Image 1 (cartoon, rainbow, N blue to C red):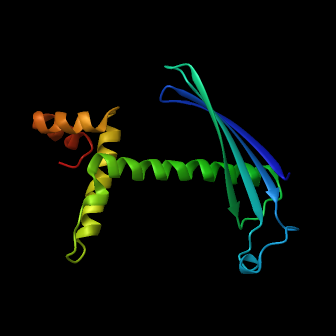
Image 2: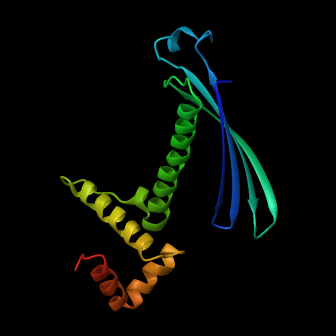
Length: 159
C-alpha cells in the first residue's frame, strides 16, 4: 500500500466515513491491450454511511484505477479527494436530469443545446444560492410567486 486517507463528512442527515487505500500497479502484469495505458495506481475506497434519520448503516467498496503515480501520502490524499469531487459532478448531473429532465430535452438547431445547458446550470446554481433544500419545491415557489424569483435574480445582480 502506498498511502491511506480517511475523511468523515456529516452532510444531508448522513455521516459518511471514507477510507481510501492506494496501491502501486507498477509491478502488475497487465493484459496486452492495457500495457500502453499507463495504469499506475489502484484506489480502493471503503465507505460507511450512517443515516441519522433511520439510524441505519450501509457500507460499500469502490475500485478505481489511475494513470497518476503516487509516491507520497499527500499525493494519495489529493487523488482520494479528486475521486470525492468526481461524485459531486455526478450528483450535479443527476440533479440536472431529475430536476430539469435534461436527458429528454431534444434540441437540434445550431448551438441551442449549449445555450439550454447553460441555462439549466445557471438555474441550478441560482437554486443552490437561494438555499433551496428541495429544488422542485423552490421552482414551484418561483412559478407561484414570480416576485420571489425577481427578488432572487436581483440579489445575484442578474437583474
